[in-house]
Length: 196
Image 1 (cartoon, rainbow, N blue to C red):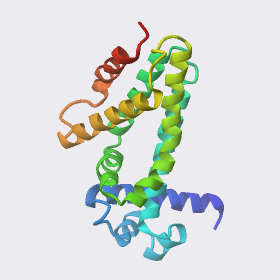
Image 2 (image 1 turned 90 degrees about the vertical axis):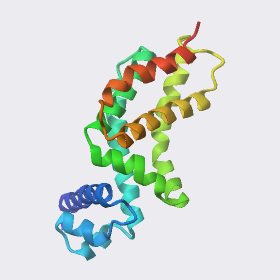
Image 3 (image 1 turned 30 degrees about the horizontal axis):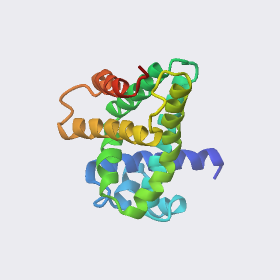
Image 4 (image 1 turned 60 degrees about the vertical axis):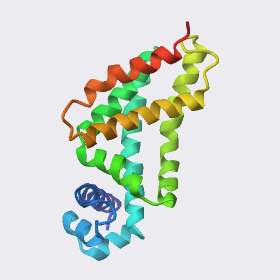
């Protein structure tokens, strides 16, 4: 099998897993259901993944990689750190609002997974953490953000708040626009971190 065919099948399995995990939940999702959704034999899944947990880890890594790439490309030429922070938040909300299966898997299913699995996923999350920390440090260097700011704590608060806004939106049944929450989210943080 050529490498492009292998990549195609790998992507097909991950897309199917996303649907199955979102519909049935990670713990109730069987590899056979993923195989059926992907249109492949059960054994084919094991040519790409050792266990169901590996599918979830790879799925998260791929999707977070796409989100990170979107964010990096969007803020590459933005010199204003406040605009860059707003852009990251906007991309995060918009991306998850337009991909409901992904939102359910990342916000609901990952929380119910084992500590070991969450640690593995945490490793994949590090580049996203670095992106926000670098932006905060850049804001301090430009005298836009408070020089006494605890960057690691503020990064935790920002990412935690973004995460909670998405989770609440899902639990509420998506009755309002997630993307419409960007200004409220970012304005709240800017009031606390802007240099006076």
